[in-house]
Image (cartoon, one colour):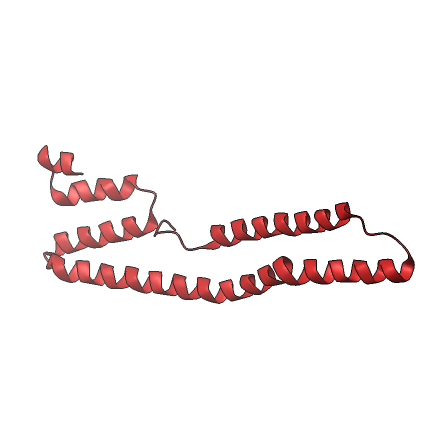
Length: 136
């Protein structure tokens, strides 16, 4: 865009080309709002303030939604990471005492390994759900 303006193109035309090239919806909206302000002769500071307010509200909403969703994921993570392996091993010990079957060290290691794998998957899932920038 800067190269186009330096080459003699007007700011409005250079901004329009930028809006058509970009994949970001927020950048498109921002650029079109700036183009409209330039064409109308409106002051740029009011247009930029409006854009900043809109983006801040979106970011705040995204963070609040993620925080609400994160509470559920924390509960699931705690169940998988702490409660299920502990309760599972406890039940296996009780059932082996009653039923006469043996619990081998391999069984305990497999239970802990499975819980560890599920934890890694949950952490990856939670990380992928976190709000990222303004690309949507």
